[in-house]
Length: 161
Image 1 (cartoon, rainbow, N blue to C red):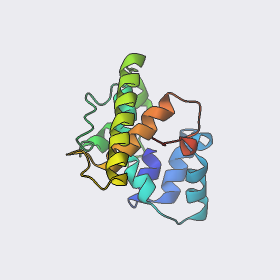
Image 2 (cartoon, rainbow, N blue to C red; image 1 turned 180 degrees about the vertical axis):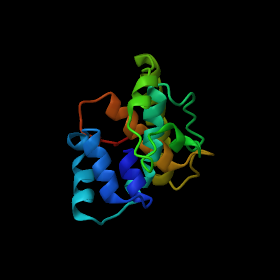
Image 3 (cartoon, rainbow, N blue to C red; image 1 turned 90 degrees about the vertical axis):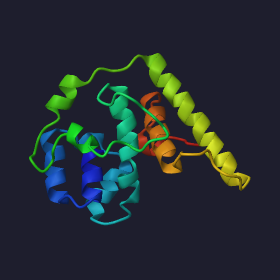
C-alpha cells in the first residue's frame, strides 16, 4: 500500500515495482493494484485515500498509538514507513510491529461500522453528517479493519451498511 500511495503521489513507478520485487511482495498485490501498475495510468484517488486505511493498519500493529476517527492521519506518518526514495526495506517496520489484542481491533472495527452507518444515513436522509467526521477517513479505516478480520482480498471487502 505504501508503494501504491507513493506512486499515486508521483513516486517513480519503475522504482516502486523494483522495491516490491526486492521485498518479494509482488504476489501480495490486489487485482486493482496489479492493473494500475501494468496499465501505467488510471485514477490515483483510491490509492491516495487508502493512506487512512494504512493508518488503521499501522494502529493495529502498534506503530500508531491512537486511532481517532475524527482526525486525519498524522502528517508525519510517512516517516514511520519505509522510505522508498532511499530504498529502505520493511525490516524496521516488521521489527517494531506488535499486534494489538483482537478485542481492541474488534472494537475499532465495530466503531468504524457504526460511524460509516451514521454517515450513510445522513447522506440518504439529507441530514447533517456527524460533526468532525470525514467520510473517506471512516470508509478507508473501516475497509482496513474489516480486511484484517476477514479472509477477503482487499478489493473484495464489502462496505455495505
